[in-house]
Every structure is written in structure tokens, then in C-alpha cells.
Image 1: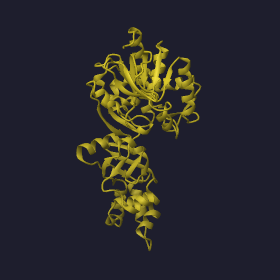
Image 2: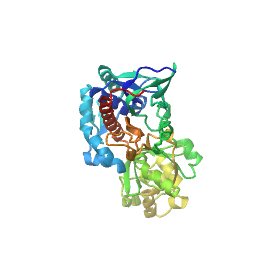
Image 3: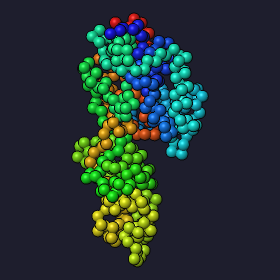
Image 4: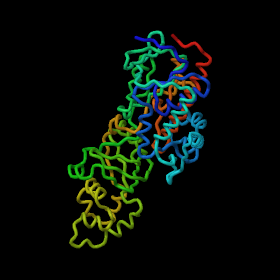
Length: 415
């Protein structure tokens, strides 16, 4: 086992939180080495930006902070120090212009993640940040050194300060597999269980073969999905086992927790949100003539394809031929009994992780002085829309600054 020179600050995990931590620590004057298990850095960041990198959101900051639910108070100081306007200024400093979309979401002008990552890495190079890929963290040696598996064998690295930015457990093929939970447990730190967030759900009993075979992957839009006093408009996507899409992701925490508590959740779907129940009833009351029920429904309401198939799937046949007012009311509140969230590996993000009670104000683990945590491995969750990346950047910067201050105070690395 080789033992390379010790480093002042080790950042483990090269996603957005780790990169932000490296930048903050290096800018504060610390020598930084960035380790990642994958062959290249920022893999989940790049994939998340494949359809358009949603960097942050432009809504008022108080409303923005409320998106983090029970974790908002602990995240607020870090996000206020790295707020959406500040993130846009930071991107501009890299030469990446941003714009606000119609939904309030903020994107790079070319929508892409790769150009931003390239110039960011060049900045880190100028700051002297060293990168070590194909270094999988294995925990700590008895003397406190960091253990890594590398292509050349296992190595030990001493560090005055360490930032753990290892992600959650979604998309494990990109490097965030949640294995760190066991490594922390060995040191007496028990993270909150990792759970899927911003995820799809399986419908109770599954779809019928016709719907599954013909419409899996088809969108139904626009719709309004309601649950627990919240209503979200957007595009629903039918899957082979259930539903996903932006309204589902926005309600996923409430749906997931209801299923864990009650065994199932039943959100309601307004499949014609731009029409009132009265208008629906009026159109449905027109003479059907010789048309089939399906044809009449399609002609009267404009519901066809996946939307019409979903209506037939959910509503009993008797309801489809009921009086127009009753059918119209049902189309405004289609029940969708859900049995389970999709597996964590498929989720966009992760809930659970290192508890804030185990961290100080600089995100250092009280039980492991000099060890900081940041990003998605912390116990918070938020909807899509730029909130996930913003919190990763903000906590990464905070942890990196804290690690630099610790390392500069304790200049001799352990081991």
C-alpha cells in the first residue's frame, strides 16, 4: 500500500458540490486535491444538463427558500451567500451568459452543461486544484488517513481537512451509489435513510396490457395533479408501470411519505384543466348519435390517444356512459391510486443523508473534526427547477470555505 504526500484539503466527489467546494477552498488560499471514483469529473452534472442545464430559479428568495421544506432554515444562510443572482454572476464570470425562461428557471444561453464545466475546470486548474480520478474512497485507516482504491492499488492520503461531496444514491452508474452511508456508520454517524426524491410512481395493480403496450412513454398534457392540498400543472408521462413527469416530481415527497404511512396514495388528476366542469358537461351533452363512447369522448372533449386511454383505464365503464355532469366531474378529478415510488436508482435526486444535527454551521461533522459534508449527501430535498443545483453549489462553497479555514489553522496534515 503506497502513501503519497499528505494534502491540506481533500475534496472527495467531483460533482457540482465538490467542484464548488474545491473552488471556494482554493480561493481561500488552501492547497486542494479533488478525488473522484469515476474516470472523469462532473458526470451527473453533464447528464442532468443534457436536456438543458437548469442552473437555478429566478423567483423571490423567500419563496425559493421555502422549496426546501423542513431543511430551509439550515440551508438558508448558505443559499443567501450563494443565491440565484450570485450564481448567475458567477456563471457570467466564467463567460457563460444565462437567461430566465418563461417558467422562471435559469439556463445558460446555449442550454448546455459541457461548456460551463470546461471553463469551470480551467478556473480550478488556475487556482492550483489537483484532480485525481479513478480514486474510490474506502473510508479511513486507523491513523485517520483517507483510504482510496486506485488502478495502481490501495493508497492512503493524509489530509488536514476533508470535504465529503459524494452525492446521494440516484443514478449510481454515474458514481453516486450511497456506499458512504456505511463508511460513516462505522464512525458512529447514522445518516437519515436514503429515499427516492423527484421520482416516478407505480400505479396500484399496474396498467392493463393495452395501455402499457401502446402508451408507455407517451405524454398527457396539460394536466393538473393534486394531492395533500397542492396542485401542480404540467406534463404527465405514462410509464410501463405508472406515472412520472414534472407534476409528479413536484408532489413526490408528499406522495412517497403518504405511501410509507398509509400503504398507498391517491392523487387526483384534472385531465382538462383549461376547461371548466360546466363546459365539459355541455360538450358531453351533445348528441352522440352512432359514435362509440370513445369517439364521442374524443370529439366532445378533444381527449385522444394517451389521454383518452388513461380515462378509459381509470374510470369504470358505467361512469363513461353516465350523465354528462357526472362524467365531467370525474374528468376533473381522476383518481390515480399509487402503490410505490420507483426505485432510488431511477430517481432524479435523493432524500435523506447526513443529518444537520450532526453538523456545525460550517457543515463540519461534530464527531469528526476536520471532516465536512456538502451537496446531495446532506438530509434535504427540493423539487426540480434549479433548486437542487443551487443547494449543491451553496453547501459546497460553505463546506469548502470551512475546510480551508480548518486546514490553514491546522497546517500539519494528519498521519
